[in-house]
Image (cartoon, rainbow, N blue to C red):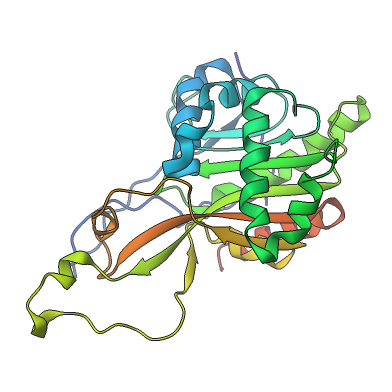
Length: 289
């Protein structure tokens, strides 16, 4: 049975950070649900929940990888990383964070596929040239692949404790001579761009939306990614290898007028800057008093 992790006082303040309940756009007060979050070590009961979150993270490209094998790798290091749950130990995780050593696992099929995928995306994205160079080395350096995802209604306040605990766990692992002495951290995340809705394009001329000029603006799904990017050696977004079916962007219009097009994003941090990046995330996410 996995142990419950202890969150120290000051690590997180969940006041006002309850997940919102989906409702209409009227002026009525939004209903608030009180939720108790618990942090756990990854454990076998999380297998299917982790697969769900990994598929959400990799989006339409998830089928390019052995997601089951990737979940097994995460579960094979139970003393590294965290899950966040709201219904006790046996429930599915609502969020997770872990790190995998790409050099240590480079012979495993799923890691081979991931390295090839990242290399292909980095080599075609000028801003990711430093990452492309690292992944081209043989063997590649000890890069820590940070994987993290959460359900859409999970507040950002659950993130800093996961990063803080990960730092502590890496330090303990290094004391035991385990292979977690990383040169860099590679963070995979998701971004989106607003696109003109096909529904609006099909509307009568007088009802069509005006097109905005200039380049498309990039948005992060998770606010902490914007902070992490400021500490990155390099970063860049990319289009998924597979594309969503036509009309998918309009299925994401529930809370905005525009449709959205999702994409991937990679950030490479030097290990020496990881601690300051985590502190910056903690300061950014901390609720205002």
